[in-house]
Length: 222
Image (cartoon, rainbow, N blue to C red; front, side, top):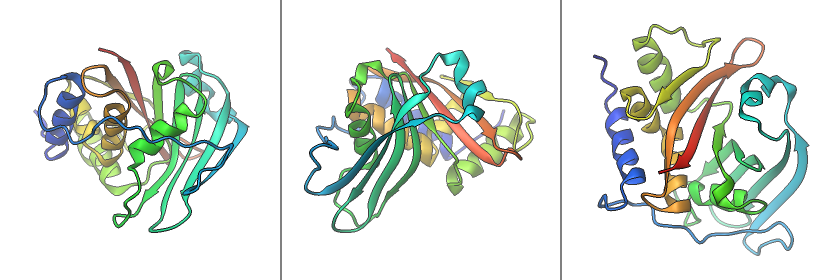
């Protein structure tokens, strides 16, 4: 049986914090952070405009019945060490396209920016899917390429979607990656413990040469 340590152990801990309301030592409290694009907040620059989802995503979203008209949102701090969030939101779905937060920053965490971005236009209760797009972050790529895919005999990049359901060791490992942790922290700071959970993680590649790695996190009530 493959072992994905340290990713698996990290992911298992995150999953328990998410699913169990009394699981101790959860470091992600509910967030009250919010921003608007009109009026502009004092500490952040916020852009907000309508965009359409590229048709290359059709095969990934058509079975999910998701909107193709989205809000493109960019949030950046005006002063201090750099913090930035770029993504797109639609009713029921959110795309994390680019995130950055300096370790020296005292600004809210990326999970809190993610919550604030979605709540600009939609109630949290409506959210079902979080996509993380065009992933090149080393920790996440290494786990998927060298551990999860290799143990399953899958090529990297892969032309087929990989679907990993909760309670599988692969699911825990993916949740323990840096990108998985970002989405798990968002779930905890948005709803708290024991309310919502991530039920599956889907990995897939797109682009002319399958050069872009993406992840989809499916969220449901507990």
